[in-house]
Image (cartoon, rainbow, N blue to C red; front, side, top):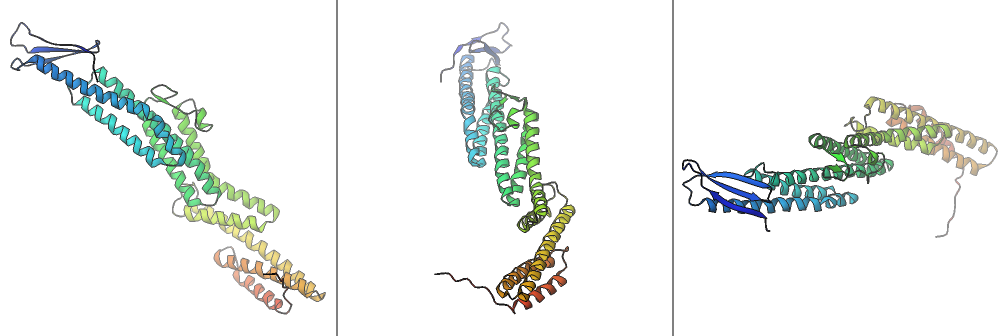
Length: 361
């Protein structure tokens, strides 16, 4: 690399007690004047060493600046596949490159010289703004996959996604407070336009962080809201399947909340009340169906329709068995009377034939 320095010259001052002055002019507009003791063998040789040092620093600074400018897309690309480790590794490598250049300048005679300081400051800000953009993209990815996991009933993985997203937003907030980031394409710009609305439409980084936090918080409320909606629809339609699904969602959520109330912002006792109330609804509905089936079976038996009676008794037994199972697990249930009814129906069932279906193998 060729650095366009104009001159290296030694100027002897009139007073021999004063040190010889070496003047080094780099890129025309940058001049350093450093004192050299008169006992030195050659002020000119010392000046040459300074220029060589300056050239080395310029190369280091230029390498760091170019690496950062070329790597913005490299930080973003792995996040689409959920590969945050690669993004973090690339950031750490770039961070080390910039830090080494900064240390080199600080330990040289040229600390504070704009020709070195300004490019490194820009590289530092560019790197940090790119990293902030990458972290915000990570939060978007975590929110998307977290929603899929929660909707599939995988509350534990969804909880981990929410916690990681919140930790990432805390990191972004801390970095934003120490840099003068703006939204846009300049050197301090954090690019938000590719993020999903409303985060991508934010007028400032602070607003983007707040909106991302709101979306993560909304995701944390999703499991309880979904379970509540399923339960409400099931009650209105008398759906056993819907109530059982809601009960499973509540119970799974309670298992996670029992050790960590903070992730979903739920109180264990209030969630336990939801679980018990839903279990009671499932038990009551199954008992109602079982009683109706048993009554139908009795009528069918008296009407000399034994096969219909057998089918109805089988239905009654199935619902009593499930109700009895839940009654033994949840406080809301009373297993004894359900067990007695189950035993009576099972006994009555033995007096009627069982319908058989033949299938060709």
